[in-house]
Length: 568
Image (cartoon, rainbow, N blue to C red; front, top):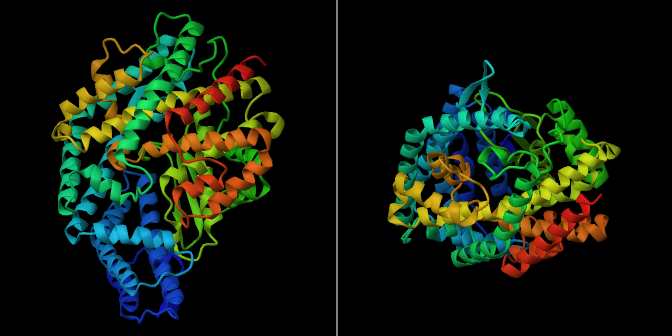
């Protein structure tokens, strides 16, 4: 019956469960043998890709305009009426394959994942998973509606980002305080959402016979290659190595600015002397798209070809606007075999990095399109983020106008210094976010927003010295409100820190052999989820490690490169 399964998104995106169900019933009823398993897996992948693309397109529509009631209704209807039924059917298919004891070629890692997923599955958790998604959407809607009045105009908080790079410190402070006050106006509503989220998470864990949500989430995220204790050790390594390096950067910025202390509204300012004007790399998204294309042509012609596909097929939505969900992401349409990039560009240099970053995720999609089975595309974020973060560094040599990019030679060097410094600055912030999540999702007090405020402030002071938050207690302690991963994607953040170490190793290889490093990078991407995480890193020319020794090597390379660029 799979000959009748449409591959047209405009048709299947409107399907309800009754239209998906016959395909799952067909797979459940079929005989499964060594001779039939390949065709069976092909058809399973086909319906799974259809469901995945339906979800992705509905999610994209809901995030493009959080005020679109119809888009929200369709997305939430899918989550409540289709998603739970799909999960039940998927569980039956996983058990069918596992019970058969068949081991198809190239399916070792998917089978490992299926065993873990089947063991974790509880029917009682299906409505809770739906509720978790709904609460996340409510968080997006709350944040997406945030605006202030700036110079007589309604302005989103994201649109203030260029203001934070203005040389006039009083202007930066005014904008920062207005934005912070707007966040604080939603303090009670976000706190209320948080308590509900924690209740759902705890019930998920209880139903799965896990002691806490961290244990549950570890299994759900298929983390086979490291433990919670490894993450705690990573936090300690960051405290030992990265925090002192970050403090040196903050102190250098303070001296260059000629101020007694750095304040929060100074942190988005270029860390170069304030006599340099703020970088404005592009005027509009068309310029962003065009210059990014030229950069990718220098990195690798095939990657440039992938990017051209995104351009010409309308797979980019980049400009910030009121009602658009915060942040940026790359998602996948598996039937169409295409990625889609979402971001909130306003003309600042971070937008360029976001474009390069999300394009790395998009290239991962293109490089894995050859894999026959959907289950082979299940890639841990610990390596998926290597794809994106490596691309930021691989593209860095081509940011100047000489290569079709955004900057003069001096500006390009300046931007690279800022990028490298912010890699170091990121690790301590990541440690705050990760440590907070470990605490909030294991301790009884994690449900209490007031205790969350206190814990966040405690962690901030431990990992983030160098910035003066005097008389800004409310803004400091509610910083966890402003990190959407904590609310939308629990425990998804340490991957960035691990992957950044992997990306620095890919970059190190590129310093002596750019073409070879890019070739290894692409080869690793093409493996998808068919080999274990350490093997993916090895294929990319890196080692999966995040201890103090590895971090020290990375920080040393970054600091020496910064010194060289600053001397140019």
